[in-house]
Image (cartoon, rainbow, N blue to C red; front, side):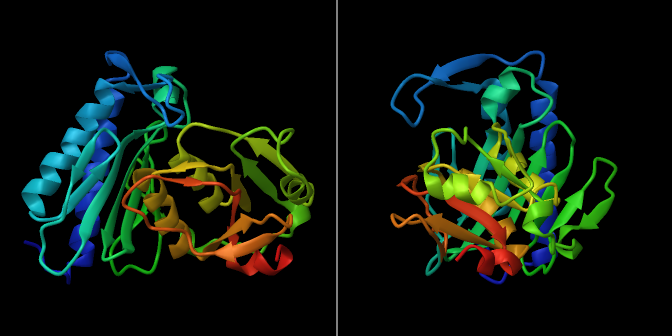
Amino acid sequence: MIPIEVNGPMMGIFLKELVRRAMTEIRNQRLSFQATTKMGYSGSMDDVFTTADTNAQAIFEKSIQEALPGVGLIGEEGLNIPCTIPGHDIYVTIDPLDGTKAFVRRQSHGVATMAALVVDGEIVSAWIGDINTREIFGFRPGGTKVHRISEFEISESLSDLDRNIPLKEGYVLLRESLEASPNVIRNTVHRFKKYHIDGGSIGTWFCRLWKGEYIAVITDPGTETPWDASPFIGISKRLGFVFLRSTNEGTWEQYEPLVAKESYSRDYYTMVVHSSMVEQFI
């Protein structure tokens, strides 16, 4: 059993290394994977998983069970092992291959692997590996900064970026078309210099916010899963970003995102901006 007082630097190195190993496995399968359809969140057989998904998840599962006995595991591909540490709820969320459809299409962006460590409801460490750029983004338990680590192990602190950019000079990133969006979304988007639409991995999608390519992101209503949400919630909050949700009155209100162990339906739009910009929207 691991104690609640984990060694932050060692845990950070451990999780980062697992992400790196999963990235290597996924890259090695780019030309040899086998794909199978599966049921999506809509209830239709419109989703897909591959041998790269299952092999990457096996890397996480085996190493975590060996090194961190008693820690729970929650993963996209049917992985749900409860925590057995008395008096605590400690688990790791795993999305072995985020953006599987983009991977199958052999896209040069929008594919990731992600993991987050949650201790008694708090996301204490999160890591996202960009399969195509080979970059790793994340923070360790007890750490004060979020790091962007290149394939050459060159690290920069995303916590030190200047976030003070006027709306009219910045870009906002969307997941879906603006045409079918309600007025609150259209009115908000037009306050920025420009908007772009992109899909694929939600992990690499959020990385574009953290790197400063965009100063805000807006997600549509939909199903929120722990393996997707925990990494981007953890890193966003560590960098000082806050979460706003659309209201029935056509406004925005700040809220605390749910750190959930099970998937749930989110019936509102979410905008994520840096805390220094909140007063411009609420």
